[in-house]
Amino acid sequence: MLLQSADNVRDFAELDQRTGKLEYFSRQGVEVEKLQAEMAGRYAFVGETLVALYRESALLKLRLGEEAYDIDEEVESKLKKTLRYRLVRQIPNHLLQFSISRLLLAHNTFELIRKGSVILAFKYCPPLRATPIFDPTPFVNEEDSDFMLFVHNVLSSPWRRKTIWDKDPKG
Image 1: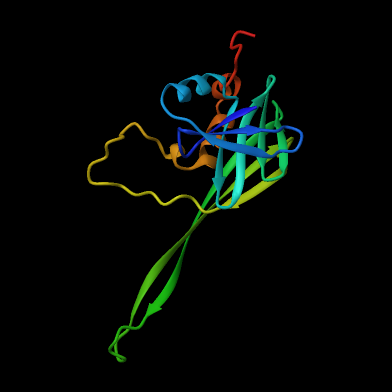
Image 2: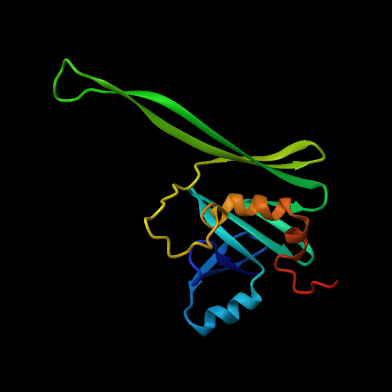
């Protein structure tokens, strides 16, 4: 099964569905477009964890590390964003002066829920968002840099859930 990297359009992986192992490779130019037509999903490394969302037959699947989860009508997702500030004391060169600043600690928790029970809770640090002075890609959304947000958005939209990587959209 062919997956495309969420981080680099030229990177792909072949997923062995029995073992869950990926064989990575890169392509350029027209080869990328041909492979994109065949792909069944996307993958990314979130922290050090391999995450893949793909369609196997008519069923979406989410793979987190070694575990694979079937995404059927009974499964929903939640994404909880947590921001915490911790006071950090900074002591400059002069020993009589000190300043206190805040350190932002952020993490997100992605949950898969089946019939009201959490079957997966995955805590991760969201990617840092850099806002350049001139943004050459104004069409890029937050989900383009946060793969778990992308997964959550797909699972939260009935239309996207049904149509993403569907080779037979009518059936």
